[in-house]
Amino acid sequence: MTPRSLLRLVLAGAVAAGGFAAATAPANASKAPKTVPVRLLALNDFHGNLEPPTGSSGRMVDENGATVEAGGAAYVATHMKALSDKNTIAVAQGDLIGASPLISAAYHDEPSVEFMGKIGLKVAAVGNHEFDEGYTELRRIMKGGCHPVDGCSPAGTWKGAQYDYVGANVLFKNPNEKTDALAALGAPQSQVKKLMSDWGVPALPPVSVKWMNGVPIGFIGLVTQTTPNIVTADGIKNLKFVDEVKAANLASKLLKLVGVKAQVVLVHEGDQVTAGQSPDACSAVPGAGNRIATQVDPEIDVILSGHSHQAYLCKVKDPAGQDRLYSQGGSFGRVITKVDLNVNVKTRDIDRASVVADNQVVTRTVTPDPEISAFVQTWKDRVAPVANKPVGRITADITNTAAPSGESPLGDLIADGQLAGTKTGGNAQIALMNPGGVRASLTFAGSAAGEGDGVVTYGEAFTVQPFNNLMQVVTLTGAQLKTVLEQQFTGGPNAQPFTKILQPSANFTYTYSSGAAWGSKVSNMKIDGVAVTDAQTIRVAANNFLVGGGDAFLGFKDGTDLWSGPLDIDAFVDQLGRDNPIAPPATTRITVTP
Ligand SMILES: [Zn+2]
Image (cartoon, rainbow, N blue to C red; front, side, top):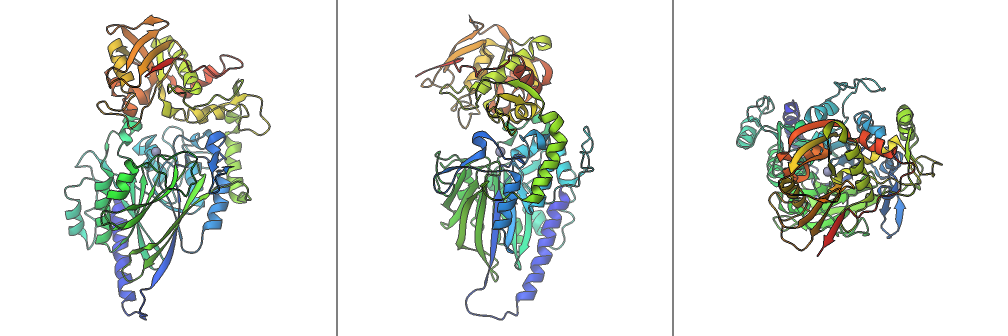
């Protein structure tokens, strides 16, 4: 249970806060309020990138507008060391694990969590991807123990994360879920109980308190409330993800109750930016992240965000009209956000005017940290027999960059593999792939040194399809298929936050009108050149995430005669071996009209 977390944190905060007050009361009072410095170093959306990420995932626009190579655990470690001083607390905003390359994923991301401990991480918000393998597995990652199916990793029994995972808006659905968190609270028990009475049972510690230079800093964890739409349903079926603002405000009160007024939100939700900006610019387009950053309680001083994989430093107004930092540090370990601030030792609050933030690009022109290099190499060696196995060849880069229609060459190729892998047994007629699940591009140069010959290794294929989703097939009517395709667009019921075009197999073509009203955008659906009628039934292949209604494609849930087949990565690897070499598919399956 997480109960221990909530109660221990609050308890620790209460005791420590009390002790602090007693100790500082007889002050050697100078007139100016005494402040102490605190430095936060923040990472988000690392996604298991122990090795330097390749392609566009490994490039970053720096403060001078130059595009530079960035990321890689050993470089992150060097930069973290260089940026750390004695006032430093390292924190993270989620998605440290999940959707990760094979070197991490093959061991259920234990290597990445261990790495984060090695570089001194103290607190991390959970991201949606922390739930990729389900809540039970997240608990194992937090607490330790070997994997129930795959057993212990080559490193032995997993010892658990060396940092706290926090998530204030993650609750158990069952209001009677067993927890001793609140009952065991000491002095503030009645108040905490009162505070929590109409809230719910926390599934994770909502807050973590870290002391620095004699002052407590409270960290509130939040994860996007859209998590149930973007995570496989089965693993989180006992959980609910509630409004981030409400949860943050309750957590803020909880911190205040134990005397913690320097409050930092670590939120796995963020906004999009204009491309090509300096990481220190504020080009974030106000969206879900901005809503949280502007609306949470004025007691909260700093908002460090994640999820959208963008870099920005913004100053927003809190509900009391005061400036508040709202930032994010890109993704894949390419940026570390450095935040310097002063805490008033008397009020224990952050002096907002003192907050200075800087997004530091994790360049590769520094010496990689030798200890972390060796650590990464150890895991590389362990996974090498699997990772380096060639599985196919390509004639040119096959990217996940969307054409104007929303199709990408790699998305199309994956869909083709999914159809081929589900015809036998599942009787699939077409396949549809969610674009967000195409996690990286295949580059002709490859990631292995000296490769450069179009060879695709299993490790590279896995980086593209890292979820270990199952391929499934369901029967939809022509009308239901059209509904699914309408659900690609914003504006309808349970609308998409932005258009998400499913990647179709080569034998499925259709037209959409960008200007037409939601519900009548899609027309001219054809399978193998034959028009689809409303009444006909079609066997549609997709991964279990989509079939479960993921990404707000609720239409899949109307499917019948569910069949489960191979893993998506296996279907993809088979496809890569089918033609030798493979040319990038032309993105002509979808036609767009005004
Ligand atoms: Zn995320």
